[in-house]
Amino acid sequence: MKFSKIPAATITRLSIYSRTLEQLTGEGSTVISSEKLATMCGVNPAQIRKDLAYFGEFGVRGVGYYAKELLFEIKKILGLNKTWKLGIFGTGNLGCALVAHENFAKQGYHFVAAFDVDPGKVGHKLASGLLIHHVNELEEVARGAGIEIGVISTPPSAAQGIANRLATIGIRGILNFAPVQIQVEGGLRVENVDFTVKLDNLAYHLTTP
Amino acid sequence: MKFSKIPAATITRLSIYSRTLEQLTGEGSTVISSEKLATMCGVNPAQIRKDLAYFGEFGVRGVGYYAKELLFEIKKILGLNKTWKLGIFGTGNLGCALVAHENFAKQGYHFVAAFDVDPGKVGHKLASGLLIHHVNELEEVARGAGIEIGVISTPPSAAQGIANRLATIGIRGILNFAPVQIQVEGGLRVENVDFTVKLDNLAYHLTTP
DNA sequence: GCCTGTGAAGACGTTCACAGCA
DNA sequence: TGCTGTGAACGTCTTCACAGGC
Image (cartoon, rainbow over the protein chains, first blue to last red):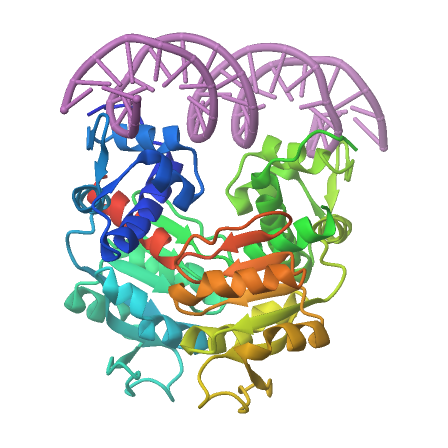
């Protein structure tokens, strides 16, 4: 185990390795080489070995990695050996789709509270049975439900305000779907999921080959 | 104008600058310095100047950038001075939410065709009025509608197959919401929008402060 | 023989610091 | 003076190439 600083890209790749290993173990693979895993993940084999070396020695020389064991270790590294409680802010089309999305629950991410500003929605339930609270009650409900990660799918103009309030009650992680750059300070970490940025990337590369 | 290779990260940032400038011009700003724009976008001022320098000289020394003009130039660089035709593959919760999402249309991205495998959905229309075709008709309909970018929101297992078929009819851009690594070759470009990877990042950083 | 683990080399991207110009 | 444009310095991440070990 090394104590050097771990590249952000390494964590992102671990997540992809994890997903690929999930698939491989599901298909019955037991041993996998860095080369084969690399091909499946679209990276360089040395990259995989280096990424893993930050956290330990998980392979067997001359053999490869035991898929199930490696998957377990990676999940432990990422903190996926527990359940995470999420709150959704904004229950429009996207917000509802996210709550209903199966991949979250499958990975241990559970929505435990939902919020909106629309009085016509407050008090109603989402398809999953989750009650929609008014965003005025954010602090109280978030604490009560034990939210650990906030998911923002509000219009851009509301995102910063939600983030600020989440910060003050000690939430340290935000997944932001609103197309704005949220200004943060201190321990709060924001990950942006940005469709438009990705589309702009495609547009650029289709325009400038 | 320089002919050096442009970092991928530069394009992503241009997209963010564009969004921020959109907001600024909307608020009535006319001139903006690299420093102020940098603060708003969460980057280094020199970074902005360098990013822009790849494409030309858009600023005025001692003054800054004219917001409206810069926005126009960045949009031109990104290829946003035209309308892009998108096809959606998979009309589940997420797919429907994407078609309904206002930010796409606002930036010139228009869904012109929808596909699903579910016979119960084929023939029906989405809320936007878009008719759902069976994915069997992919090639014919995609050509007819002039799809330029494919948006995949199918289950993971179906994603690669759709990508292959899009590749054979000459589609060169894919926005992939399925949590799998799509294997591509040649001119096809895939951008992944990966909620779970982002959440795993948060989980890691909340676990390992 | 084969595949992992890793120091060293290389490639890449970012930041600095200042020249250039309104 | 003030802010952009940019070569050079810096730091970071990736890839190579081979030592280490089954």
